Image 1 (cartoon, rainbow, N blue to C red):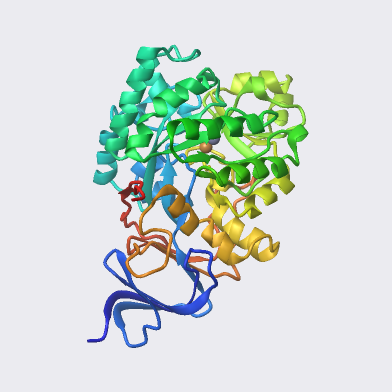
Image 2: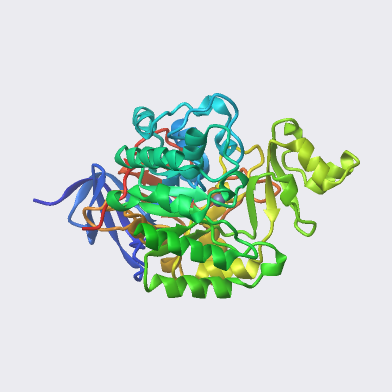
Length: 485
Ligand code: ZN
Ligand code: CU
């Protein structure tokens, strides 16, 4: 009997996600799975797509997002991701997760990156998981439980100090519970003011349930500037003491005096990787973005306002320009703007390239989906790596670039049967034009879908079409870390 599929994509250039060489062939899909890869000329399907000259790859996995809320408000909220070919997002990063803590008033920064108190209604991780099930997005969600959400829950408003034993115990319990209810790991954001007060020992004590649950520790480190190496050491120590894999978020060397130091940090990570499981993600821009912190401004670093509660009209403006308009300095202007968000140009393009090209890195956008004038990484990260850094600059070949967005990411996070093109894997797929794919989002005009992404499928269901946009389908699932046997 000839094979009959729901969908066959024919004559595509296949990138299987493993980093191995491209090959021309067909991919057959039935239900939510890939059923055949290779020469399917004897097979037929309900729908056939002829993809001559087009690239077919596993759907991209966004290793670092703040989409905790965006995954709950329908496909429209994640147009920024579907339009890039993303089929899975990792939420709950930098210590910030929407569960398991309810908020009675506006949460302190950086928790408010996800919104005001009206969004903080999930008292347990299970409630969050059920909300996702009731109202799924177009992408799969892989969730981390955030240290800061746990801290605010356990310590009330009093978070500018180390947690006490009873509070640590309560955080540890909440984390253990979250890990049984669908979270795959634990994230910290030790650089942020409230969390800087958490000593290494607090993190180790809270993270303890990860070991039994087979979870992963993910961190926005205590310092990405002068003390970046000490922060890497701290991260490695936490991993060793808890006995779990560690993941360094948005790896960078921040501030002008540290430009060039990625040679040092990458060597340090590489040496550690031979002894313990360590991974890191990066985004392809020399500017970061987070909440606006007036006391952390640096004279040499340009700042663009991304949102402001008291002055929403300033979104998109250079902070220096806002300050001039108000006849004051940048610091006072920043104080008037808060609560607010900002983009800061604080990296060296050479470091960005060295980190991207390093064999151990994977790609994560760190996009912030609810900002009025977001960092362009929200809409542009994946096509930018493919179009600018791979095709135009030749920094990495397409096989490697795709591996860093698919197979490598899935293997490190333990996303079983994802990130690869092979029979039996989930049909998370992206079809794109390798000659045309490019980001269009810029710092001036950041809300721009990319070019060249032709069709995207999540679990076998089309979610995005290049010519007509979102399909409105919501096939995304909550996926959990698979424990290696
Ligand atoms: Zn972060
Ligand atoms: Cu982040």
